[in-house]
Length: 446
Image 1 (cartoon, helix red, strand yellow):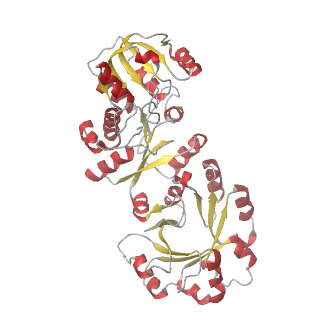
Image 2 (spheres, rainbow, N blue to C red; image 1 turned 30 degrees about the vertical axis):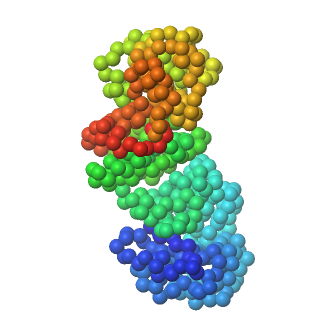
């Protein structure tokens, strides 16, 4: 159930704010009163709306229950704070079927305690856990499965948690105009989430990613009924995120830094990174970054390859050239040593002449400089740069200075997206078409 949430202001016309439109597809309207406005909402206008009508009372607006008790009859649900309900239980004359009790707290244990309060056992509940973990969410969500409850976590770092609620629990709030709560989706997004297949990118950070731009354009151009979301989560939440993603029937996911190996642990072998999974039908996972590198270097047979970095992209680069002599360097000597031993490659000790240089670090994306001396003093026929930018990266400038062929991060992003789209939807979108979408984009990782 998608309820459009509007924060009422006495400086705006409620009729204009509601924008009455029975064809929008939303199931109801919530009027949120944080304080008592100069004039009460126009009840006649609200009553003309055919969907569910909620009144959410916050702060001093709760006194409306005492000063204007008749307001109750014009709404289907009255949202009242749990603490207010406890203190005024004898004075609150709201029919049980109209009462919605809200619990806002930063403690999952406090929510558990409140859930045992017999006074609210059979009531409609809205539970809001402030900035919890996805483990908290997953555990509490299971515990209230037999209750009449809508459950959210809120906070800018947890935008995705409102998405979980929209995909199948109780009353689900979205905003139009001004957002009424942290992490809330707009009405347009909420309706798409409800009615379309949901795909998304899992990573951290995602502020500079261009994947959402690509897929939204492709969905629109090819009339694909899907929406693409960014899921920025903490490292410790990854396994719980995957469980919840499966529970709410997400159609497919992409993985970027730092989760490509985490995803491999669940969907592949835990050693070789993957960057996509398809949940529709048989679960399929793979690495389109690898396919992109092979595609972009087709016909080249490098004898010597130098990889800068030791993360998932470095492993992908190693997989792309199984017949080459591969050397590795990095910013963390201990991790470079571990990578060298695990994958049986040499650590480069001094400058030399190489066919390929592959930059698999954030240098040039989140970090503007930092090319090590061993690279500065070496020679390369081709330089491959995983990071991308709206401006030239430091490795692109370096390639131009050296006279080396350059393969950019945007080319990798566009090519892997082309493969990814084919796996998900069975259609061919050329890398060149995706590059046109990316023109004028921001810095980022895929």
